Image 1 (cartoon, rainbow, N blue to C red):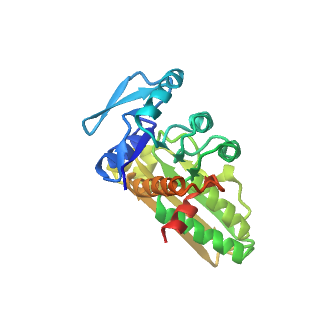
Image 2 (cartoon, rainbow, N blue to C red):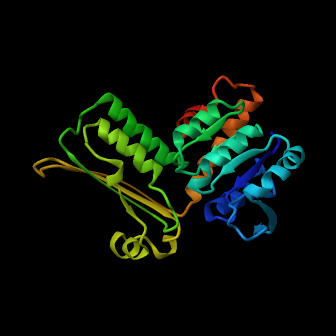
Image 3 (cartoon, one colour):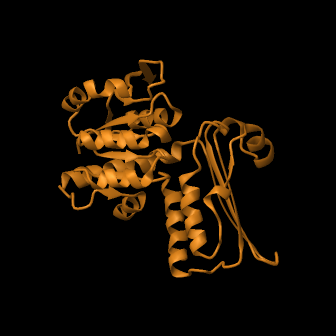
Length: 278
């Protein structure tokens, strides 16, 4: 298989940097030395493992993208930018017929999905690219569909802790809350406790100091009305390496769709990627 050219959007951000570094180390991919970034970024270039990557602001990218696509045919974009950029970036990819993996959370998700559905190239969109968490999420969803109302009357409490720079509420937490509500809980997304204070994260939760700037700790607690039963689900992720594996599985998945000219469906999730991986 020829190397798949991937452009990582979101540099100089930490997650995008990890993805770019992973792409350089993985023989299946070649890193396109350009990255979509925010208008507020003052840098013109960033170095990733001694590879220079040129940063393209929204005001600059229209002038360069055709040249990039000509130099790197078959390019697939991986987006780890900012929630405020999600919809604009997706429209840009669709306009230039670039297949993409959207790992960034937030934005108007309905508009995002409609943008892809109206386009001509496939995309993978998921609130979480960690395969194990996606699988866990699918199990809870299966339980909700199979045993609706199982926890009727129980009280749900949800906390999610992420690095201070994460602007939005966790997409994974939102998805799991939807399943728990189907199981009988009556819980509002706005009631998710969003922890971003490093002192609380380290002192109260116990997040290791070296991962304060990059972690995802979630706890879902279901308590019976009389307090006689308690069920708790946790998934604590330190660092961001776990997301790279799933992200690049999604890239390979898209490449297979393109190679087989399978465009009947354009919008995919990580569940589709995991199922195909069987």
